[in-house]
Length: 584
Image 1 (cartoon, rainbow, N blue to C red):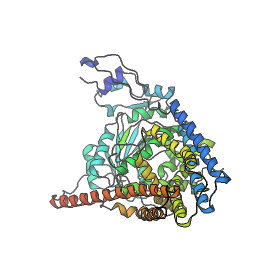
Image 2: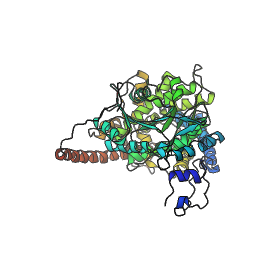
Image 3: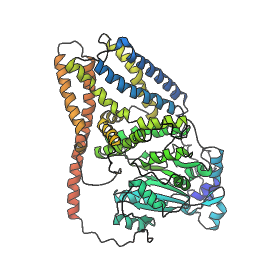
Image 4: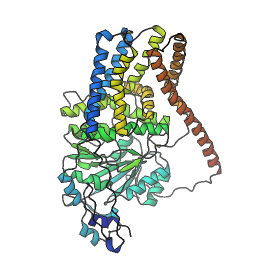
């Protein structure tokens, strides 16, 4: 007989580090085979190999910067200034990122955490209540006092099957809690689903404040000591509260954030978007822990209710409510904790439309911090480390605009003969210094991701229109419509969201043909032509990816129309909704 959760709680050490248990026979069952120890989530961050790669990469960055700034290597003013501007952004971001990554071996689980985790459940009480086989009924304790927890599942038009998986998983989380479905999509189907599964249901009369407003509305009704936020596409694991709640034994901890791990890496867009986040969640966020600068990412997070009350609720002034709320909490002296343990699995954007809208929202929020709440301002009540970390966050998406500047440099040489560097410099000399920076960045990617992911290179190179628009939105105060990953709607061609990329691809393709014709008699193509052809290939790969997506979208739309014509009429919903005046 397999070991139950209660048996495991009794016969195995209740702590995070793995200790191989001795052979036992749980309550008359067959002997349980010891499982292999899980991989240490911080082992790679503490690896001497990582430190060596980072040191070599830093030396490469310094050498490349010295090469670019050497007056003897300067070319024409316009392209030279363009290259220096773009590369300065990339170099500074790389140096600060490497500094943070080198701090990622820090483990926030101390004695207080393990002691609190060991006393999280009252075993005699579980036996007395007859709840051995019902972990969601086990009362949670901190400081030997019972605590209450609310689990919020926020939804805004996601597919019903997606919402159901998430709600079922939320209900099954170990430890007594109340599960709430916060439905800003105002769907009767979601209301009926919540009633059928036994979750509480909330529906607002307006959508003010987007997701942050949705959570604040729920906090006006739910009164738990702690609350969890889960996006509708993130399926929680049963140990979510067991691995996070013990951190709150320290009274200054405001929230515990866990990574966004994705289970739908089955397309170029989803893989590229997912892998782009992998280094951040595996290395950057753990590194920010050391500086008390890890920030909330909007889902898979547990908050202390009193901390959120202290800052007046979730920030509703930005669509990036997660980062802004974290910043306000840190300014008030609260601490944050990040653990790189996967406790929920969700969906990353699968389409060009979803990726564009997600990145636009995130980048706009970052630029808003830079322009409206500069972390370096002396008015900010932050430590020096926190100021630097939030400055990196606020300027991160400038590195996504830098490729736009670099894309325009080769055409300046091909059409106008303007070169960024001295023409007497040989290919080999240029590549030597260039490799010192970019090849070492690829080496870091190999170490942190296990291999070089060309999907990441593609998305990073073609996202400049998104980030440029985000910077404009933040500078002008333009309101950004809310969009959630996984929301279903009318099929839209991906080309509707990538007009600048298509135009840029056409321009670079023509430029490559012009350059190839102009150099047809040369023995070796110029650096500008090779650079331009490479950029054209990357943008071309994105266009091809979009074309394939457009075909799939059209095929799915046709099948959906046929399915709707064959589907019988739906019965009207009758389950009640929880509103300010009553409860389901």
